[in-house]
Length: 71
Image 1: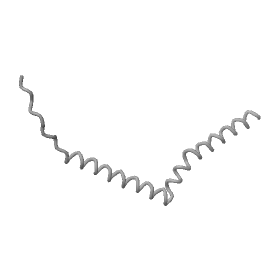
Image 2 (image 1 turned 45 degrees about the horizontal axis):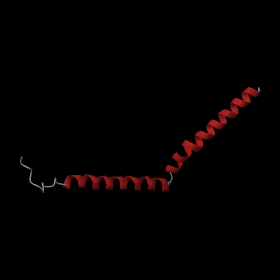
Image 3 (image 1 turned 180 degrees about the vertical axis):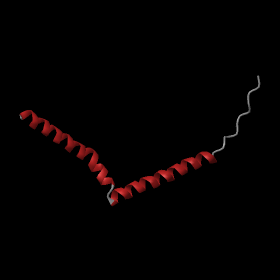
Image 4 (image 1 turned 30 degrees about the vertical axis):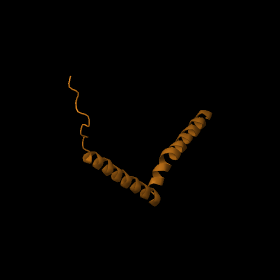
């Protein structure tokens, strides 16, 4: 009987750990403030991505400033 109680307590602790570390962040992300935070992150990522993609397209290779050395 004591073995069943110990196993039940361990199982209960496992369920509590799962709820604290996995279910609580998931539930917090579904609140209105969590959804707004996700939208802000997506908007920032898209803006930063367009900045860095646009920057690479506008750069041109520099002209060579020194003439090549002739042996």
